[in-house]
Structures are given as structure tokens and as C-alpha cells.
Amino acid sequence: MATQAVTPLQSGALGAPKHVAIIMDGNGRWATKNNVSRSKGHRKGADAVREAIEGAIESGVSYLTLYAFSSENWNRPAEEVSDLMGLLRMYLKKEVRTLSKEGVNLRVIGRREALGKDIQDMIEGAEEKTKNNSRLTLIIALSYGSRDEIVNAAKTIAQSVIDGKQSIDTIDETSVEQALFTHGIPDPDLIIRTSGEQRLSNFLLWQAAYAEFLFLPILWPDFSRLTFASAVEDYLSRDRRFGARS
Ligand code: IPE
Ligand code: IPE
Ligand code: MG
Image (cartoon, helix red, strand yellow):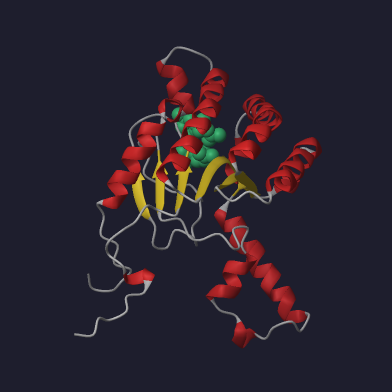
């Protein structure tokens, strides 16, 4: 009997997720729970990033996106914003060599022009240094907001029509995808949010169209490689249908 070809989009049996995205939430509550400063909570949160990277590599994930700072996080008190920027500087200074040795390709999405010039330079240097790596693509969302990303994409497309590079009729999902910060990156298969909140907070709205969601009660600083492995296990038990019949 002839077997019918199954397109990847219709496959119900799942392999390891190709792209996992994480909303790293709960540093503040972790600090309160442990009776330490918020700033210490953020520092512990930065340590958990290593766990996520190692978990992703061990699980054979190809793309890991981490939501580190949202467009809306600029509205936090100046002292906290400056703490977070300080941590980011430290992270970029300390970790890029390790990432590079591990075969990680670093990419940053978001409105990077809102970040300090020194941070922008460090990001550019890190992207350049790791651009030929292919074991894992680590995407850090910084000053990132999905609506902002979509508005930006609309402007890029409108401009290309004005410039005569394409006509309105040729605008399709691929042209939108190409105008997003995430161009070339496959959509996330699994989106994890820690801290018990069950919302997207302006993260990957377009890209999450068919993502599986996992909301975990643990606070981000407590996230470990084992948490990552069990999240992947949970994902493997799901039945993804993409609108078709399973
Ligand atoms: C996540 O932890 C870090 C960022 C959003 C930058 P929070 O600081 O949001 O921690 P909670 O939600 O107050 O516990
Ligand atoms: C989402 O967390 C943003 C990041 C994890 C970077 P928030 O703590 O900012 O989200 P809300 O305010 O609870 O929705
Ligand atoms: Mg939060």
C-alpha cells in the first residue's frame, strides 16, 4: 500500500524540540522568599542561564531563546534597570569566551539601539566572534517587545513597496517573517515560563502561533538542567496537530 507523505507540519510523533524559548521570570519573588535583595535575585537568575544553555545542548535543541529584558522593563525603577544592565555587561564580558568554545552562536533580538553604546559594541563583538558556530544558536531578547517588532516589520515592508522592491500582492507570511528580528530562526516549538505566571508579556506573538506552552511554578533562579530535561520530556508527550487531524 502506498504510504502518504507526511509533511513535518502534520507530524504528530515528536522529536526533540528544535527551538525552545524561555520567559525567565521570578527573580524578584525568589529574592523575597530567600530574604535577599532583588539585585541578588537577578544575579542568581543570571547564573541559571548557564543551566538553560547546558540543558539545551544536552537535549539536542538547536535554538534557545531567552527573554532577558522586555521593552516594558524600562518602566522599572532606575536602580533596578541599572542593576540589570550591569549584569548584562558582566555576562557579556565573562561568558562570550565560554559560549564561543562551546560552539554557541549568539544572536540578540530587540531594540538594541536603546541599550548603552558599550553594550551594543559588546553584542556586536560577540555576534561576530560566534557567527560560525552551529552547535546551538542562543538568542537573547533584550529591550524586546513583540508588538514593537511587528510594527518595525510593517515599516520595513511598507518601505520596500515604496522603493519598488516588491508589490502589495507579493506580501505574504514569508515576507513578514523576513522582516522580523527573528528572521531565519524557526518558530519556537516550546515556550516555557517560570514563576507560575501564565502570560506571554509581549514575547514572540507572531512566532508562537503553534508553540506548545509550559508554565512552571518554579522561580527562575531555581531553574536547572534537570528542569530543562523534564520540560522536553513533557513536550515529547504532546500531540501537535497544526489544525490537521491526528
Ligand atoms: C525576571 O524576574 C527578570 C526580569 C523581568 C528582568 P522579575 O524581576 O520579573 O521577578 P518577579 O516577577 O518580580 O518575581
Ligand atoms: C517578562 O517578565 C519579561 C522577562 C522575563 C524579561 P515580567 O516580570 O516583566 O512580566 P510581567 O510584568 O509579570 O507581565
Ligand atoms: Mg516578573
